[in-house]
Image (cartoon, rainbow, N blue to C red):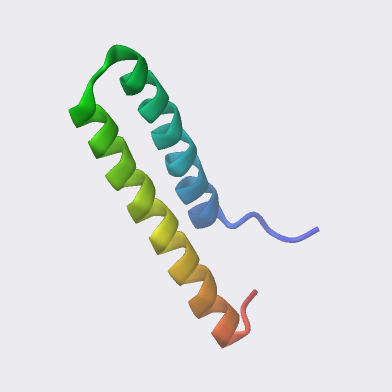
Length: 61
């Protein structure tokens, strides 16, 4: 079994919580909350994919 990549786990958790937050804010009809959760989601996903691509180029994954 491979080692757990804690940085990727943290990014995936942040993305999952932001998706849940978007659902909660949608139920509460809070458009500002939806926008903030969407921004957090985009940042977490983009950073994670960029980091994974960089590590693949280096041959560490």
